Length: 66
Image (cartoon, rainbow, N blue to C red; front, side):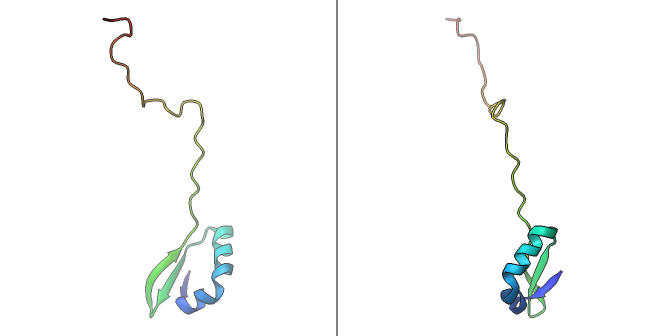
């Protein structure tokens, strides 16, 4: 969907609700040129607590070696 900047300004909150509900992308134009877009933010997936640090620690040698 495309919308003129002036119309977007008047309907901003309604358009934000629409994007949230429908996942639709809205392109905002000014003097016929696309200048911005409104789209839903992708929510990050929660990481599990167990295994979060897997692969970040390395072991070199044995603790018992002198």
